[in-house]
Image (cartoon, rainbow, N blue to C red; front, side):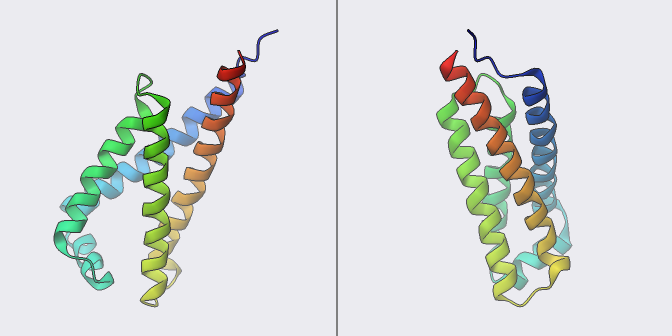
Amino acid sequence: MSAKPSKALVAGFWVVTALLALQMGFTAYAQLRLPQVAAAFMHLGFPSYFRIELACIKVAGVAALLIPAVPPRLKEWAYAGFAITLGSALIAHLSVGDGPQAWAWAAATAVLWALSYFLWRRIQSGLAQA
């Protein structure tokens, strides 16, 4: 008996993960190129170099999630990094009193993260049993 993941599970994973990757990729682009995002980082009290560093690491994390040949342990680290980034973004916005218009994107992206990670773990557990 094979415990191969269903096609629906795999398709759902790739749809959610593609949306997560698009969101994280866009925020990396915005952090590097949009002056209003640079101003938001200053508003949160972060130095400019952190914004650039974070954007570069996001690109690496997106690549780790999307490239199938990346080992599962590296993907796990990418998911962990995104969880820390999204949680920190929420904390930063809430700590300076920003309203939902500032932190809603991080919250919505965290939902995509959770769905992607859950589905990835389901696929991984199915592959381990096969």
